Amino acid sequence: MARLLRIDTKNRTSAFEDMGAYAGLGGRALTSRLVLNEVPALCHPLGAANKLVAAGGILTGTAAANSGRISLGAKSPLTGGIKESNSGGLFAQKMAKLGIQAMVFEDKPADDAAPVVVVVTAGGVSIVEAPELAGLGTYAASEKLLAKYGSRAAIMLIGPAGETCRMAASVQFTDPKGRPARAAGRGGLGAVMGSKKIKAVVVNDTDAPGVPVADKEAFKAANKRWVEILAKHPVTGQGLPGFGTSILVNIINEAGALPTKNFRFGRFEHAADISGEKMVELMNARGGKPKEGCHPGCVIQCSQTFVDEAGGYLSSGLEYETVWAFGANCLIDDIDDIARMDHACDDLGLDTIDMGNAVAVAMDGGIIPWGDSKAALALLRRVGDPSDSLGRIMGNGAKFAGQAFGVTRVAEVKGQALPAYDPRAVKGVGVTYATTPMGADHTAGYAVCQNILKCGGDVNPLSNAGQLELSKNLQIATAAIDAVGFCLFVAFAVLDTADAVQVMCDQIAAVTGVKFAPEDFLALGVNTLKDELAFNAKAGFTKEHDQLPEFFFEPVSPHNTTWDFTPEELQAAKVS
Image (cartoon, helix red, strand yellow):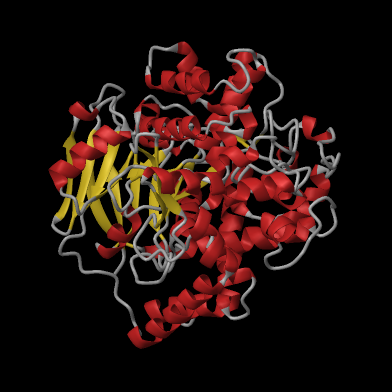
């Protein structure tokens, strides 16, 4: 029977409890419901009243392909609203096998309290002071923790950015090789974890009971079909495994939607030099690995081992968003230095999207030159020094940097920086940026599918027609996928496969023993969004917050299109 594990970070105690009112929920549906019910909407995000929730999905811990994602939830220091941030890695699966649906970190210790490590095994929970880990990067910290608690362990941890409560701080998770390169990056949830003096959570599932499956034969049949669906689709079966997520660099650049020089242009002349194709070429030549999964059971395998010129490891999660943020957005075309920036962010515990935007803002403000990769890397590394005032500014993300540097051209919604698609050239994803409760977030409703990739339909990316309904439907579907624990990339295949939703429902029904139909899947997404919108309304958000910065009303080349939705029109993209 799945349980909640509550950690009192002030008194440093733990307690298990039944799911109660949260029974049947997982992933984002669980984090958002718990935050709505238990976190005062007007509380300070770094105060004692906020809670950090780490939840596996409904299917996480089972053999369901690509079901190993974890959702983190809290009130965001970056946006001031509700936040769910999603990551891969081993942590969620091991937590689920121990019979834990979610961990809830509550209250707050004294500011001078030592950092602690929470250790969870089949034998129980211990909370151990770990002053020796204070200030360490995530790579050094995870190496020490794996040596102490065993190579079978999985780790959720923060770096110096989280410890010093920087608003762009991420929470990092170890991958199958023990590298802390998987990130719940968005929303500054690493700062929430840091405010509670939790340096790391270690989970070891040795002797764990595993996740019970009510109907093993039905589950086996449904999962077999599920694997077929993912393996046969050209995106999940060929494109992503072949070139990783950075296969999108050339595609989005050709579409005129690759934001360049802080969203001034839609194309980058050096896009080929930072593309997935270029990365694979370098990995093959240097002894890297272009294809691997971020968690067991992944059949897409879009991660990689990217190495430098000497064959030294740099990153296992050099994703499209990161490559764009430090690349085209900053006029940087050195893929090795981009990988070094990614490594620095993983080690410091920083969101690469917000930090890439912050670097572009610093360039706009004359702090460092445009296109200077060495200066950008040095600027990022300054975040690790808590006494460095410029580092403290950068660690708080793009919006804060804009205020500090007097730069008005800051691409953000609700305080969170925009991802790697210009909303004037991919209008469906622009609607998502503006209206999702999460702040600018492409994963909340990835209209790039229909706008550019033509998965699940064909909606003209340059026209307003059809974008509101498209974004709304995708936001609902995404919330449900996040609740189940699936990687969002399954959506490519789901959108193009007639029986895919039914197969997902069949898996859920087989595991839980409770009938689950497509209408239940839809309701799962709708109810999750309603919870999130309700929290944000209590936090003071109105329709006026559902809009992009005013510079997006200027045309962008090469299509010379503008953003021209009003906040009133955009309300049609939100559930009610």
